[in-house]
Length: 248
Image (tube, rainbow, N blue to C red; front, side, top):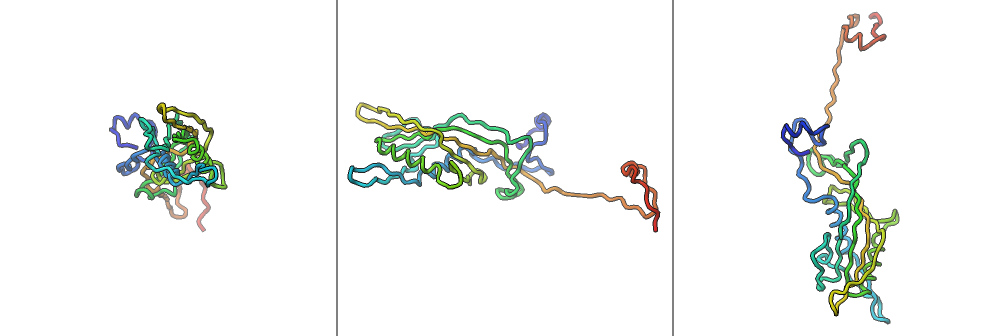
């Protein structure tokens, strides 16, 4: 919770997460949100994939990869023909939903990212965005679409693919393909650009790094000598059990 003035703090109802006694500064916020961290991991994944496009009628398929510089996590103003094939993550509407009425902290994250801190889960974030693929030939588009569809569900456990995000407190993100659209764009009278739009759903947990303090347990015991009478307050607390057995 940021450090606010006393006036503003008095207007915030409830106990903010990360407010500890004695007070100390909040951990610095990350330079980007979970969405950006997730898309950077997906970009890394796509740069390491090997794609195949059809070669000559009698020759084997031709291998190729997409350079990292050609994969944008946000749309650029234009696509340069020299950068083809190009991949762009076109953002969609994102929605955050509550994880429930209570709060949850990831106990295994205590002191991992900074001393005296823990990761606090806040909400579930979902967004449907588009992986836009632009290529100079149909064969290259076919190869990229086929490769991405196969690579987005590579494990035997479940549909979709899940990544850890080291830049976002090691949280998980899940990507699943929903649909695809193929089209053609005439960039000029002599050049054509073949486009594929692959709609993907991204799901992750939005979190924050907050301060914590260890709970200090204490117990107060009132000891009286055997046979001593109870004081009135103790008798009220004991109720019917206020009688004592005579000392042996």
